Length: 111
Length: 120
Image 1 (cartoon, each protein chain N blue to C red):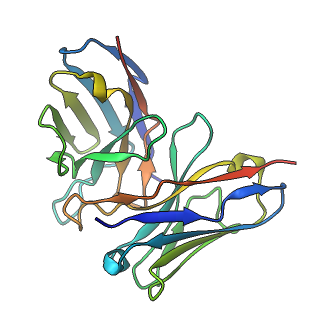
Image 2: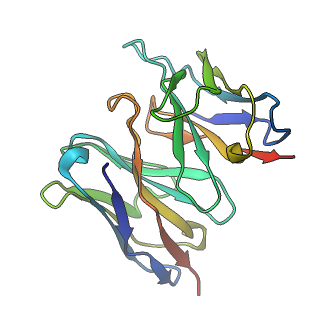
């Protein structure tokens, strides 16, 4: 089974400042079709998760361009160029190469 | 916009059974793998099970294999999770979801979740 890890697990951020979350998988997430099966989700309190980034670097519809995803193989990064108050919540990476596995989550707190 | 609505959650004693249902608002999701994802109180997301569009392939997380059974009814646009041998650690919010972002060009769908509490 593919294991996902994230760091940090807690991230206090100042509005207007950048933020970065790392995600690592125990196996490469590159499929033979060329796709990298790594998604990023944000879950706000009391809500279902919402998709931010799919296939490693593609922003989902309606996601602000301050969010970006990068990485390859087993190492991935979610970046927020300038954090806003509404970005608070728990961020999860998820692999979709073999069944599904979520990372443990990174709690982003606005200072 | 496709909507998913779960039902069937509740309070059950350890060892008991429960059947969760998830109704989709239209037939769009019949073409995709569907999943159940759960979240224990104050914990992260855990994928539980998934089923192929035609039901011919099914996968489970190790902790529920042999106790839970996922199924779907395309005509009813519905997804099910039959849970038996429930344990206290199965407590949480259960979401049905279509997580196949690659095939759907970035469109995924989650329900609002249904609460399952296993307690004596």
